[in-house]
Amino acid sequence: MSSHILDSSLQERGRRVIFLDFDGVLHPLGTLADARPPLEPATIRERWPQALEHLGILASLLHGHHEIAVVVSSSWRMFLNDEQLGELLAPIGPWYEGSVGLPYQGRAIAIQAWLEVNRVDDYLILDDQADYFPGLAKAWPTLILCDSASGISDEQMQHRIRQWIDHGCPT
Image 1 (cartoon, one colour):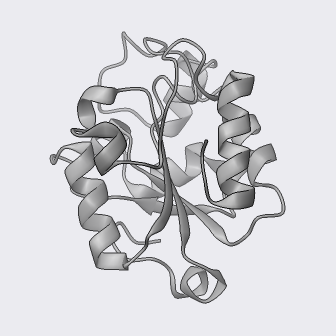
Image 2 (image 1 turned 90 degrees about the vertical axis):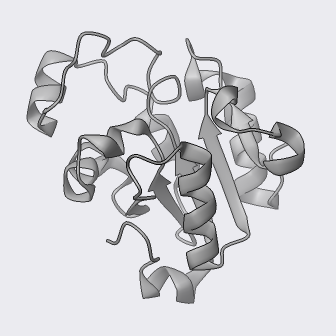
């Protein structure tokens, strides 16, 4: 798994990518409010069992779609390396392809750089922070902004993700 370049097997299968934020997407924003790096995956699971509580939903949505990769765009990439992120994301292990890298760059900049390096144009961004994506609809047409309290547990969000998975359009 590379932070910057897609695994060649994914390039052969297809070039579809989901960029994944954690806070406000896989669990409510503030779930780990008292967490302070450095942290290990085992510590996160032990102290904050509700962390990543919606990961099973994403795994269910991805089931049967091996042409899709998941790349972490979350700020968690600043304090966990790709291997540690992979350990936390075990339920979606077959789809996990690392992080966008560039841990101290803004999320939009890091995603854009990753897309340019990997020449991917079929992608979806799951996030809860509009401020990270200047120009929103025009610049980021495949951005799904989740409600920070419900994330992807919201049925409408799941429908939009399913639309992209099945049809390439997150409407």
